[in-house]
Image (cartoon, rainbow, N blue to C red; front, side, top):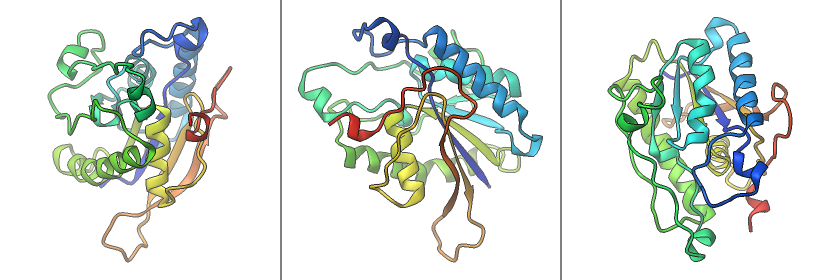
Length: 234
C-alpha cells in the first residue's frame, strides 16, 4: 500500500519572467529549471526507504520539466495523469481565455522519454468549462479516492509505497485540504515546495486517513518561490 504521499508544485514559470501570458502551457524559466534540480537533489538526499518510487505528473510542460530531474536522479518513472492538470477557474473561463489541452502520455513521451505511457491509464480529464474553488476541491477529493486504490491494484504495491505528485498551485492546495480534512485551511505553496503525508495506521475509520508531516516546505528551493493561494486570485 501507499504509505507516503509527497506533493510538489512546479518550478518558476517562464511567463512570470517575460510577462507574456499568451502561452498558458509555458515551460519553466531558467530559475524554474534550477528549482526543479533543487527538488531532485533534495529527494535524492533522503534515505533510500524515504525516496519516492514513482512520479505522477500533470501533463503541462512546467510540471513535466519539474518532474524530469527527480525521475533521472532516482531512476523512477513518470506517469502522466490529466486529472491533476492546472485549474481552469470559472473567472478565467468567463473572460473567454482558452485552457490548453495537453496531449496524451504517448505523445508527450516523445519529448519526455522518462514517461511510462504503458503502465498507467489516465483516470479522467478536468472540465473545459471552468471550475470554482469548491469544484476543484471536489475534483481532488475524487482523484484521491480513485487514484490511491488504482495505484495499489494496477502498479506493484510493494514497490510503490512512496509516491510523488507534481502539479500546480491550485491542485496542490485542494489536495492538501482534502488530506487534512480541512477544506478552508490556508495553504500557499511556493515553487517546488513539498507537502508530505503519511498513512495513518492507527485510524479506526474505513477511509484512508493521512497525517501531515509538513506542508509547503521550501527550505530546499533557491530563488523566488512565488507563493500562491486562492485568496490571491479572487
